[in-house]
Amino acid sequence: MEKHISTFIDFLKASKGISPHTVRAYTEDLNEFFLFLDKKPKNVDNLDIRSFLASLHHKKLKKSSISRKLASIRSFFKYLHREGYVIKNPAKLVSSPKVPKTLPRFLSIDEVFTLMDKPQGDTFKATRDKAILELLYSSGLRVSELTSLDISDLNIKESLILVKGKGRKERIVPIGSKATDAIHNYLPERISLKNKSPALFLNSRGGRLTQRSVRRILLHYSRMISLKGNLSPHTLRHTFATHLLHEGADLRSIQELLGHSSLSTTQKYTHVDIGYLTEVYDRAHPMAKEENS
Image: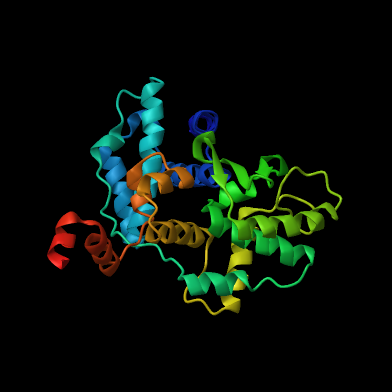
């Protein structure tokens, strides 16, 4: 069993370029499934999978977590079917639990300005944290994209960065002037560590900053300004997309900046209230103009 899971993970790494976090999630999900079942993959049927999902439901696991585990099982059996180890994918006959849709939280303009002002001073930590906050909000990067940035990906003169997104897809993303200034102030402090790491963002020991460390940094500053709820890199990514939309950017442009493969994914990041939509309608629709004249 471990051999099948291992070759599946190797396949995902080679073809999909998945992150270490995703590798860990797939591995844990599949190990949990086969520990529960104690069967070889070729002997698994759809009733076995339903039984596993029912056990998760009885444990009061969130529907989103159950759906993720089912997705892992589906991908695994899809791979085994393609490799000829199983005759069919039994997970195809199992439907996912309906997950209630929730709109991600985003910050107001005032909250963003207050947050960006919190890192104070010209120390390594302060200038680095300021650059991280500004860049996340300025360019809407995923935390994995931020931590994988190298110095060579930065074009400070043109205010551009080369971002390595999901599935090893690369895109060029502009950096706002505030973020450019913050990075410019951080670079001398980074150089002072005299480290040969190619990473743009370093920890105090000179190593590449981890995703967990970035999340801790954001949590620290969100507590300083007493934000309701925890601030995550995803919150700033969603704030970036929402503010762009409110300022008139079209969804296709936001899709390119975020690195989404489909427009439907981008729409999940756009939090637009009905009042704003009404304003847009009144301002732009020909019939609305006619009625208001």
